[in-house]
Image (cartoon, rainbow, N blue to C red; front, side, top):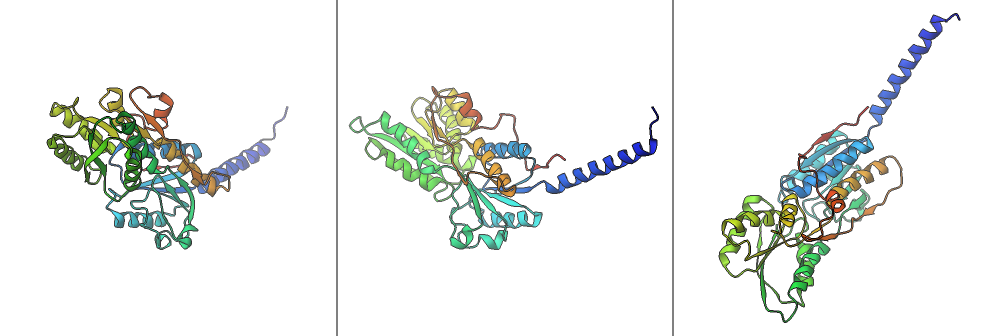
Length: 334
């Protein structure tokens, strides 16, 4: 058979050009999603990060991650919103530092970039609401309610006064307010007595100092707190030789709280499945940008956890792998 070399060269040349064009178009088509967290101080947001990163890789999108360094840092988060738009983000996933932070001015920071609220409630007026294209998260009222319900069932009315101290984190930021409301509602017909509440940002040293103050009070039966507070309490109670004197209840799950549950150092924690929430948020943004159907309000089912109810599937939907470290950039594979 006689082979037409010129034809082969022509076909090869066109094939290379077509492949090159497809690669170029693929690179151009990769959506840019910018995610902003209140902080990455604990494994709650680390697990959200893991969920977002794994879903970004699956969806083939570019992901950039920024974190504000703490709930008091509203101005820093505002600057990060502006950075996302300067980067050319097609969509922004926002874990707000304050539900009302952008109620009347979100557009001034993001222009017309679509926004997806993650984990924390984002309250917006009618004008700003046009930017909000999706929400992922649970009502943290029920996280607090589950923790209160657990204690109320252990100490019903008439069983004898049981003293607790609340260390729920910053007084008015994140999910603290609804958690507190839900907790109070759940215990109102029980013998649970709140001796005192202590407020501080979810910083390890700040919470450790509060735990030490509670231990020194000498009349506390339970500490109910954020995961950061409960993780600090595990070691502080051990140091004070009071592990068996004060019970620990967390209002959400973290790696440290999970280890505490495994070792019977923590009695209870609800999980709102942080990994799943991260995945859902990226999925919402990607589907919106691709004009695909998606659930605009997605909410995992809260699971109450005790040392006897730790199921692998729930933990995988909640916590990042133990070796995982924060990831701030994912580039779509061409």
